[in-house]
Image (cartoon, rainbow, N blue to C red; front, side, top):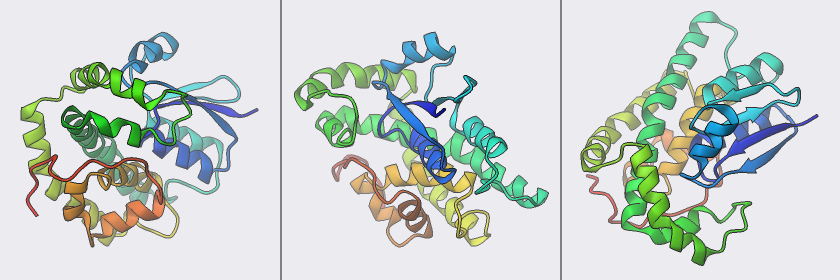
Length: 241
């Protein structure tokens, strides 16, 4: 019996889990939720507010990309998402945790800040969505949906300034992880999946591409996630070249 993935289209942690399911060659279906509106749905179904959530074929429920990847590794040995060597595994798990707790929420906050300025981009990020929501309807509900998402993610001018200031150093950190061999190997590990999805979403922000171009981090993101919907216009963020 296949698994069921509860997800939001375009969500980078959801993309992480879906890629892991594909790598593990696991049968699954996707139950797609509406951004911001997903919070009460998730709470009623899983007593958690965030996606992704995975219901295994046996009924077991796991919420959160790190927990899901760990459980998939326990259930399906090949290909492994964590090294067998204890020291190497510790480094990968530290990078995975940083990607989940630091880079992932920063990219999410930047996205919703961008949507506030350019609500017209939402249909672009929904091009591959399974939900039959017309673009006109998306434009109509985006202001409310965006306001809810910014409130839920504690997005404001202060967080925007902090995220923009931190971004170059965060990209340097990813490049260092690649140089050290923690990520970027021939086969993606858990940290590759966790970081690459955030970087790939970041690459859809025209302003951020000036920071990403030519970096090993960008090459990693595009290798693990060749396609990613959406485009945030240039001039949305005040990023130094």
